[in-house]
Image (cartoon, rainbow, N blue to C red; front, top):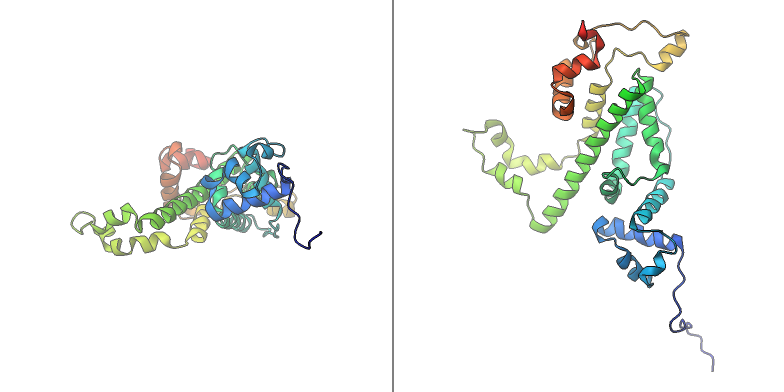
Length: 279
């Protein structure tokens, strides 16, 4: 006698799988629980399938992660960016930070530099193009991008690690160390020790990225729009950075010494970055 209830799947029949279902379920696990919780076995369990069935759709976990990132990248609206190179680079940098912050698991994946979703590379292209439009060579534009990239990844990785640690222990070890400092040995640190955790938690990436861009894009370079308007490239004024008026050399030197140690001291880097200083 027929019934109106749902029909049960025949015993032994494997569930129907699709690449879309696999990507959707993997994305949910990544977003809700993080990268470390995603395994092929866990994913198969969520889908009610045998682990080997997944390999008919993806080669391995790395292939799955690339496909998930591609799926995410295709959902991101591509906004209009400012035409002025400095503003374009700042806007693109902040956009990249915010997109990754919304998807913390992507930071861990991308930090290896081995897995990447090609559909998101338009942001990198915009950042490189902005640096070139500002007057950098392509090689120097790559340095600009990589420096910004290292800040973004480092910032988000540290924040993610701190959040997980606090969720487990309720406090971070360095906060406890800061609390024990005295004005006799560390007067500056001790003056803010009681607010150390609060200061670390502040969202200051917009100010930081703006400062980094200003340090990496010296004002002496002519922009592409200026060259195009004049028909030819205007003569480059070979001034020292401290004569530019809107580039503080102390800020640039501090940034270089803190963030780009492989290039030597701030003075050595300044000479290589500003050819006019060699004379």
